Image 1 (cartoon, helix red, strand yellow):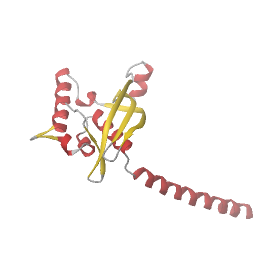
Image 2: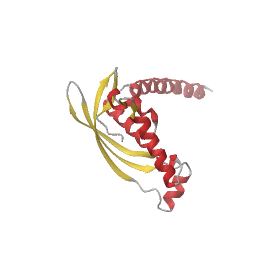
Image 3: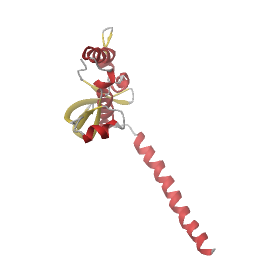
Image 4: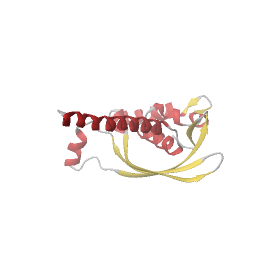
Length: 161
């Protein structure tokens, strides 16, 4: 009986340490950084997600009365329809991303992202596609200018259309 209570007593500090570690990791993940903003933007860009405007500078979103993000999403959907595909077929998922800070000054940060993209396929189809050599990955590289606007890092000077 005594060994059971010793086992429980040794488990409690490990449990407390695990909970504390989770708390610190969650806090660290919530910190906004230029690399994180650039990768989030590119992920949304390749997924044709209209929420990408949250990570774009205000000047990049609007061109006069035209919302460039909505026009981009609309053009991708029209292209998919013209090809006879669902709009989901035109989306990509990013893998193996590497983020580098190239240049930094008081006003902006230049971030380079190297990643691989593959057409978005619903699970379990990626496994089947892998068995037959479908869904090849393509290497992409982007250098993005990221500035702090309204307290958040946002991508500027990116040509959507």
